[in-house]
Length: 341
Image 1 (cartoon, rainbow, N blue to C red):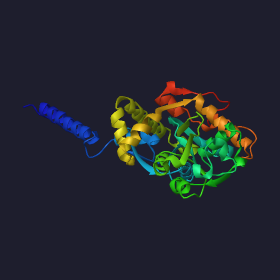
Image 2: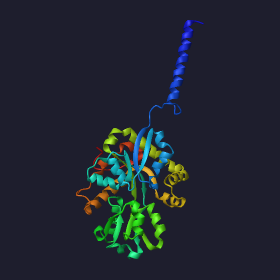
Image 3: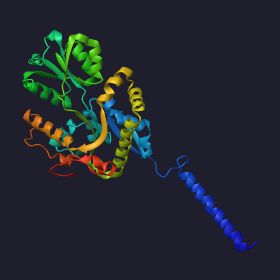
Image 4: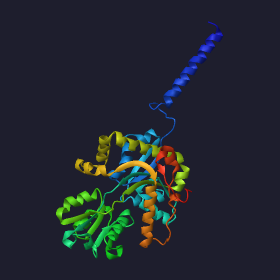
């Protein structure tokens, strides 16, 4: 055979071998992938309202987007925000309230998205302490986790019933102390949330009276991050939000499987998940209702002398929209005076 033909055949075979080897190495089943998953650590409150994060982890939505996400538990969620500000975690899932406090302190953190809204906070009163009506709370000792959204809900509830915070004695009670606080008599009443409320109802039964304390205003679960981390990792922000959005869509297309994932992850009972899961409204968005809520809580903090500030912050500076504009642009609908740094 002609030497030139043999050479051409040899080159052709070599190219095929190189191409096949490259494809195998880059394929998911090969020994090497095009990129190593990027690590992200997020602080999360271990409750069913954090469901999208657990679903994204279980269904591999994070890994599908090139992320190696580590979930760390924090309860109350404000502790996760504190850890994030210290650089101990990259992201935090919390309520919107810590963002209000951070804005007053001019701290450089921002909301990336809202992922759930829920009404699950209750106020329990002991009947044996003379509490049967809301007006009976005047002069009583009320346990509440200070510095959290529970402060705001309690204050608003009291105002709606003709009282102010100064009309009651407040005791700082952390979530791990909820059950013992109300059952041992350390306090006369308690503001708490699920899953602790279910436990208190089962222990105290008819000896307590309960009111929904949110007065129709939902709590928002938001993802927050430091501004410097966002600026350094805009691509990670987008991939993280894509993962959560995939989880939100999964809750719609696979509701039973979604409940099962969260029930198993948090070791919840079937009866609990059947009652509480429908209270969660999952879905990613940045809408004007979030801004109005932030402003409402800021005005309340000013009126109750919980800050030295006298003006409501411009929350446009504390909401990062670029990630959501790439992932789910139709869900971004906010109007503020300013823009993100």
